[in-house]
Figure (cartoon, rainbow, N blue to C red):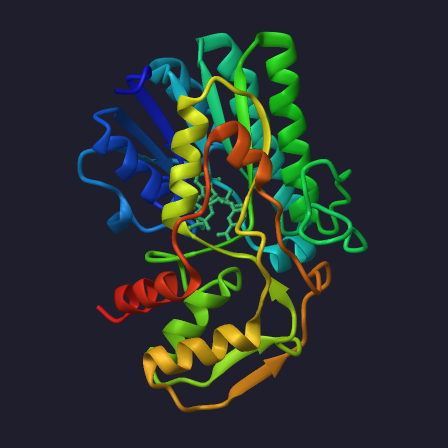
Length: 308
Ligand code: NAD
């Protein structure tokens, strides 16, 4: 049993948020979901959750928070697209900085005990640093998206220092799995899988030699639950520490989907790093968390879900 009885999941109609909602409901926690459905889908929301369609930027969101007074907040709602953050950094900052600051600010007034923030590790560290990147490396966010994620982490730390609201910021590697939106540009695995299953040519941004650290959504949910249950605060990388290049993913998915069309290459985005992998030893030591799902198994489960 968890020591918390009510939770709010912002972005709970989204990919990662909806899986967190399911895990909380399995633990008999009363779950509230706020999502504006900008990239999420109401079908993802567990029917046992209390769902409100609303933007976290809506002034009524503050009233909502004061009424619901959750014990714990999982803040996953965000503008998640790195390319869009370059095109429209103001919109990115509104959602990712001001939205997060609203939560940090109000949480102190309404007695929220803990905030688990979905941050990002992929674009947070200087490219010149040795891989895999640990939290000890001083961040050097290379895109408006990464800048906004870093800013939010700092506001949550400030709220902890001033109001004592505990927080954990989880810096995810590249998350993949069932329910990931294949329409955006964020999840290469969901995009390639969906294109292949529809018999469309696959799009690869850049040469495909860029590497990423792919982590299955179930492992990310487990990290969120560990962050809720452990009496700790601070920043944790959540990844496997292993690099896989996009061309390798493409070939593995081709085998799983029996797709035959060659990939079409498009230019890489500004702010996209050539290589990335996260050192998650701190999460292992302090949260007692480690990744359990191997890439081949995760890809198979993802393809199976998209093929349904
Ligand atoms: P997602 O798009 O599926 O989920 C985000 C959800 O937030 C969506 O349901 C969307 O409708 C909602 N949302 C967006 N703006 C909102 C607003 N103003 N008010 C209310 N709801 C709003 O994406 P995801 O991959 O599940 O990402 C969840 C979180 O994890 C994000 O904060 C993202 O930055 C972070 N993250 C994801 C990855 C990844 O690889 N998927 C990696 C690092 C960090």
